Image (spheres, rainbow, N blue to C red):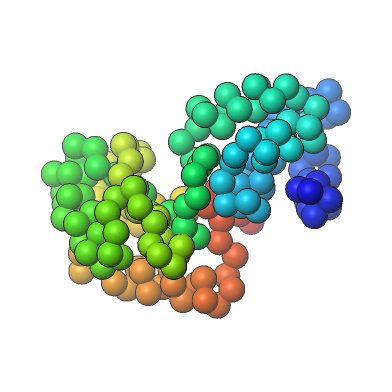
Length: 174
């Protein structure tokens, strides 16, 4: 189903790699599958494995290794708040509490409208910009509660306007 619906994109991805190096297309195909299905379950992992002619377990292991692959449904926008020590010293706990209050969820949950998922994560490598939040891999630095409403409004407006959103890294290079 994935290949049939996204043949041109998949063929374009595969064309970037030599025929004997199809395994190199694994991450881009997983990004695509995750964006299409909203998560990577056994069926979508099997589909990617079949497209690349790889053993299911090889693909499953990659999905299990990377924290940006989700095996559960997430919202259209995943808000990752770094709660490592530097960010906590600079206000990450207050940021998480403010987001929980504004979104009506706890960290680890998704809003009822399936728009936002809020997660606590360890170091996202921007300690000098703490507290840091990523919204679908887009960095938001020095995010204090006074910036949150404007950020959430912009993200909502982007979705409502039909701006492409990706819970994976798939659209990052465009």
